[in-house]
Length: 201
Image (cartoon, rainbow, N blue to C red):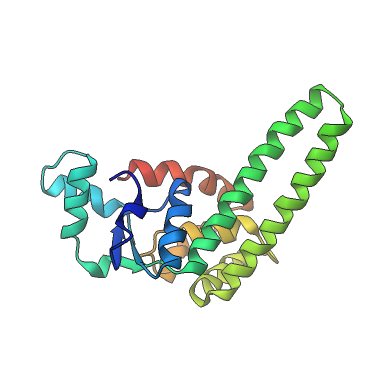
């Protein structure tokens, strides 16, 4: 199986993690009424793999996912998927802005300046949307406000992204270790989180 949409006859699908490459497929399935369940902690796959002495492969991981108790999965909602999509666009804009800034430092061209201005507008728009979506989710909003208050921040897209990306099995108390972090420290965690989550599998 190369695409999740090849399982369009399934009523429920269980996966270990969601990445930007499959957002469109997951959206299509959710809109059709398929229930998507995501593993609360992707590291569980590695633990079960080590426990059973299995090698990492698509086939073996599929078998392992089938053995993991359903209590370790969380049903993905359309709102949660939209939040992940907003974060992906926001981060792409940030990267594009960085590249354009490098070019404008070398070549002072009006088209580049206009492009940078347009990207700033899009970047800011999705930053606001991310915070709005976080505040609409009771669990996310509680964690988000707690971290912002401890860091004396009114609002922070970086904190919102961090909250959205925390392993789904983390409880509120697990965030206490983050409260001493600076704004820059949180940003560093966000940048490295994708690499960390993939190596844990």
